[in-house]
Image (cartoon, rainbow, N blue to C red):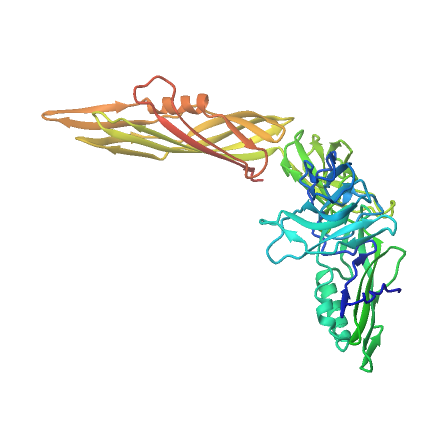
Length: 546
């Protein structure tokens, strides 16, 4: 590997130079997913900037600030924020954590005085996160690190750095650790190399890890890391040089390479340089297809939305055609195929037929040039028999003589049958009455027997709409009251009629159609009383006992 040497300028005692870190294609990192958001790139912002300088910002948040004197002529500056790896060409797509990216133009524009570019990053960086900004070298088809300090704005949502030319830029996490500091004067080169190999495998990537590369899921099947170094202590000091080497796995024709070179020259004292090179070998592999159904339990003729999420480890895979299939023949899916969204999901609707049972709806994709067909399936229970529990609390606080508060906790159980979206059912209910009297009144007698109900409703989409009606709800009690020398019994036979009217005319149940679906509500009876009855209710849907 050739090295670029820093020559000693006349009249100077020392000269140091650390060359740019060169990334040929890009290494896989920890595969957290494609940063910079799921949306595609917006139209670029275009502003003409002259020798006086200025700032250009696009709607996605990327910007460039060009100082006065940086340009010699007026130039139409373009800025375009990139949503992620999918917004890059196949050639320039990185295989790493891409925190954010932006394209600045005209490509190749140079500045007499460095300009400052700003790139949004997602997720935001924490206080201890390290970040580099890379530029795409179109001629060499590689990424190179921008020299200089990367500044992270408070909150960690944007990063900025000085640049001397325009290109395509991306923000990535640290990939070199503290190798240079550990390298020392050459005597510690082997231990620094060993430490870097361990760090790289633990923090960057290792055998078996997956990530998106050129829009397909790939697995790391081989690693080759090499270091060539030479350190001369002048004029007659020790010489350190060697080529440590590490290899694991196998090589493939998909070779992701990066290397870092360094050179240091101090006249008459020391001359040292090294090149650290990493090869990551990849093979296209199966992605993960996770399938879910909502609701997971439906009646015959009912529907359920089936959603497939396609990922490569933690990276979403957008733009893939997902094929859906009803495996058991208990229903149909429509559409039979759908493309994954920017979030990596595709959906279809399953419609059950006339038979009960458990259906599997499979989702599969074809990628890696058709060589891989990963799939997954969701289970949907189809049944016509369901049960529900309706609890209603009725409260009537009289507040006048004779003083009393009437509370009835009504519990109703219904068995439901669902056929082609029509719900019918029947059940029973019980009272639990509390009568709190005040003044000179006391309870004389109480009658509140159990009662029967019928139910009717429909299933539409993901919801079940239901109404429960009592055939009769008899409630009767007597209060015995005394005022001075007058005693009398007061009969109350109307509460059952009032409760049944509220149940039939005021309580309309709407629940998500599936086991555990619930609904609740409250109100005041609308029947014109001076002191109306209050009510609140809860309903829970579940599968019927077989």
